[in-house]
Image (cartoon, rainbow, N blue to C red; front, side, top):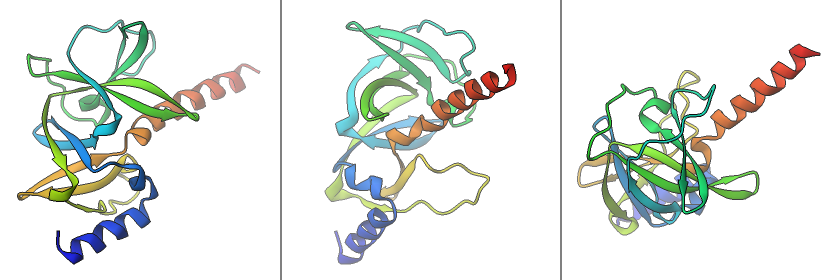
Length: 181
């Protein structure tokens, strides 16, 4: 890695302190023809798609819950979460079970993706900060952009990925309680 790339990665980590917790390896996966990556240390397992038990009043991107060795795990479809066109699940569709920090603890969450691609090693990639798209685009869950071999991978901060959905449901519950009073 050249010296400028190291400076770029250092600058990115200073502007995005949550990147300091990101490891040196990333599991990459595909969604609608684009590559995304998550810290491999957060990956618990990769499973083929199995039907989940739907929950009432859940957003469309919440596919339901599954029981994995006695642990109830919520499953989210990232295509729908990212407002990408829905695609029927096929033999390549997988659920990546990840650890997500929530309220001081870790919980398991499944994310449905089109397929798993590769593992990126930190020594072979250059990480840059994602550009500012303005208020119209929510980019809080993007921790950076990794480039290697002329490819670009969007790095996802798994702790921030589902925060807005949890906060929104908490705000909806609070608003409903306020309306009832």
